[in-house]
Length: 529
Image 1: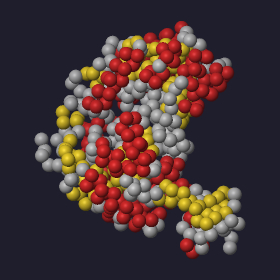
Image 2: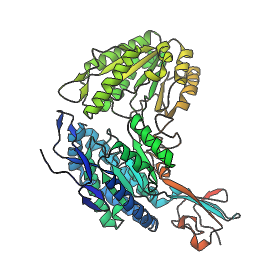
Image 3: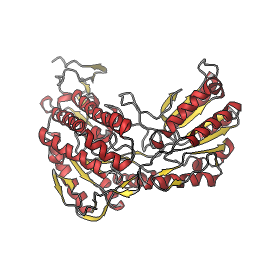
Image 4: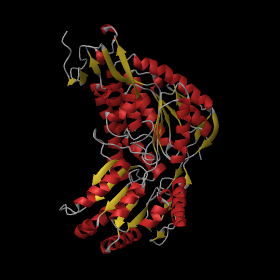
């Protein structure tokens, strides 16, 4: 086992951490600790990173957007060139499949996100420039300041704190990033940070534009997000830890954008089951067990109406759960959390339909688990029955009629997604109207006849939702340019002399293509002097 402790990245230098401890990631395929040793930073490291980031933020404000664009594209190129090393490292740390998951899907998506962020930064549309020539008032979104990014465990590339969506959005807005690695994949994050430093040097951006800390104590993490030098924070992870950070940030008035827990309900009507029950069962099981259920959009709750077709559907997915080999979970912590959630649901009264819901001892795994409860049970304690079982487990809720189903949907917490499967011929349109009316306010993305697992990296995508899916229902973590506005401040220029205006608000359109709202009309034209 290596005794070397990896350094942290602060102000362009890989330096020995002011450590209060160390940790190692675990290989989830064999439960063995990986050899690399990483530091738990003290406040001294956080303080140094914040100071350097605050200085970098000032430098970035003086630089044209083209420099940011150059960096994001150069970084995307670096990511693509380092594919093999990144994929092998992430596989060792997470157990996620090399192909197609890591190599063929997630890594290309990550490079694509960086390039999309570059395109958005180049166009300037994300800043939403508004000009009122009569009043002499002009406004646009601008960089906010240093952004702290806390990455999740389940997407070592696409949501990585040093390369993923939050990172790309923050950089595109002109902010430096302090990346806080997820403890499940610190070496993967280190590799991304190394690639970022190469891209920074090549494009001559401030060295503290990207910095990396691996882990901090809870109190230092809270102090980090609430520090006056921190412009905003992006966090994806557990509800408990996220709310602790939010409480600290809120006390200081610092913006923080959270992605927490989500059960992502799937509602299936009897008419849909009559028409294509077998196909829906296949779609559901594929979606629910994909990636061992470790997607934030995993459909963890199925709502059915009591009938013969629903019972047949339950039997079908039950058999498929039992016949499928349980996948590997990301870490021992995930396996423990899943086992505890399943115990909570069973103690509340949920019936276990599969052989067991227990941990598998030779790797990070829990048997595929399907539970069931009645609509009345759910309504008696909706909070407990919405306990997120993050992993390869699902809860089926069987309602006694559509009125009870509507009541169940009304009792749901917020989720990232919600899906309705109905008859293809529209024969149950009134049922759809009733159920969709209750479901839509509870989700960030409403789907019809399609499982929610995939998240398209599209400008129209909303990867957000009401609490506890996220901390604010008005923002998305996926999709450029919309995701960028989380890490920006709106600045109004009132009676400011023309030569003192930022380029996006000048009479001359700086790109010739940026959309600006000029006297109530969207236009790409310059203002006629």
